[in-house]
Length: 416
Image 1 (cartoon, one colour):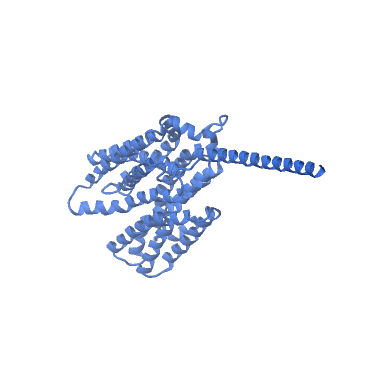
Image 2 (cartoon, helix red, strand yellow; image 1 turned 30 degrees about the vertical axis):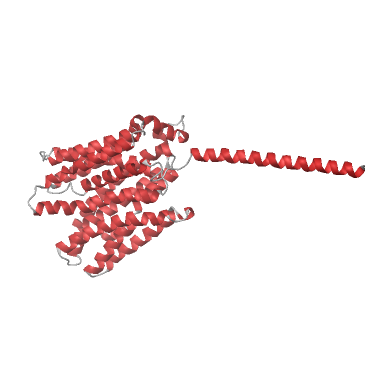
């Protein structure tokens, strides 16, 4: 009798344990399903998921290529006064874009911002193609530059939210660099064949094509959608302007962009002068090295950004940036110290290759450090600082060279 009672109590305990285990498994399964649902709500997009992103990237590539063709060509056949006005207008256009880009995103979304960028870029090029009188040239270039600045914020902030963001931002900037590398070659070829240089600006059709593709592919990305996507990081009791002004990361990265763009523009502007005067090279060979500098610069953006993207997350950020800075400083020292034309030329090309991914890396760092609702404005502020460095650094270098009688390449070492 006692054995029967023991066996029955033992069986009841086993049943209770089994029931408890089944309930535990069921509850954990429910928790897993909830977690999966929660993760599904925050799945990060990629270049091909959703499939429309493929067309969005293609339209961005076309627009960035068109922007690069503009910025490397507007100084052809223009007076020094006009070029100086264009530099000043470029700074003003970038500042206006930085102050309005968040408003355009909130009211019109990425769709409307991209459409305005493509429209101003295309109309500016079309007006230049019609060969207006010179007072209108700086104005039209500034209109197109405003579109490029808007595009910079809209395209890079969107690409920065995707998987493999470093590589995709590098491809966008690589397309811009491709335009910068091809533009002088195309313009010089047209002039040598007797074709009026201003017809080069009929490339406005390229901007219009990219704008149509951008508007259609981003059709669902209106202002309401943008506000919803960035609402989780926005603080209702703090104004957008105050957040940007109080963000140390935004200011530090903007200063880094200014130095980066300024030194790149200075090096590219003085390559031909340095190689012809200090290394006794011919003008044609020195111009070829200048083009190879931009091509290697572009290849570096296309290639090295994907290498950086493949690194473990703990190695991203300051590690690769510090490594490339040290390499560039070493190569600048080699350019200065190597006595031969060939040695300095090879060092220039390698310098461009390793300096290429700097700006995409800065944009990637910015999208990781700042909340999403600050991305477009922070990139716009960085572009404004970059335009300032791009315009003022070569002028300052020219003034120093005029007073000292030589090209001030050693001065770029402390800037890096």
